[in-house]
Image 1 (tube, rainbow, N blue to C red):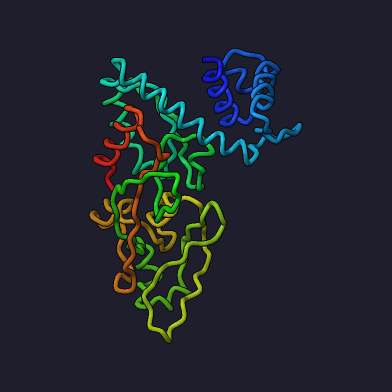
Image 2 (image 1 turned 90 degrees about the vertical axis):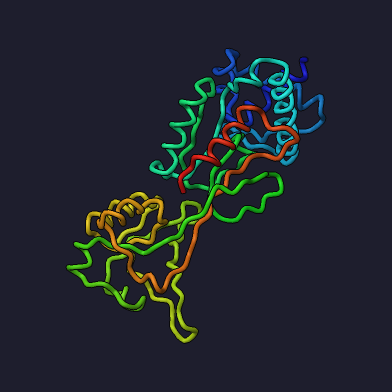
Length: 294
């Protein structure tokens, strides 16, 4: 059992990257936490963390050990759940990461909280590419193809993407009939958080036609800001249909250059591959799969 306690403490240090913060959470001194990690390193014969006065990072051996430790703790939690009432009434802390799309995500999370009040949600709303294993997330919701063999994924749904502008903007500046005319328009652009690169607008053009250079009137790393500005007559924005569905239906936004764009975005939920998912994770995956309105 001492080994299990050491494993749990090691995982917590890996999550916080701090002896002090881990000690605060567990009611221990930072020196006690540090000594416990040192004893574990001595017993294993490897160094688990690179330490400096300013930072703490996992070594290659530490990252490998962390992956296995998370699986061990997950199996213990699942076994305990199977032997207790918790299997019938999922409970505990669930750490998840979702895109910074509160209008899409929050209704589903609100419904989940109402249905499973004993599950504590720790949510990271961020568009950055998190490392699920390294950062200790139970599950993440993301878009695009996923190729990490350490993860299991389930498709949540797909929706189209459209270029839109408000009637007020289009009346003042005209409606472009061809992508080449966008040079004379205000373009509201999405910037990828991880790279800082601007997302291209995927027009279907003839082989002889060059892709238009878009004026960078405004750029942001979250698309909800672009939708807001488009509604304020500030320019054209390329957005998924779920975020502009209501605005299109009431005429507050109009589709522009629809004949030149045929693009979809797919949402996935991903979680660490293991032999047994805990009850709280299983019900979260099932609920989100059924209730996320993409």
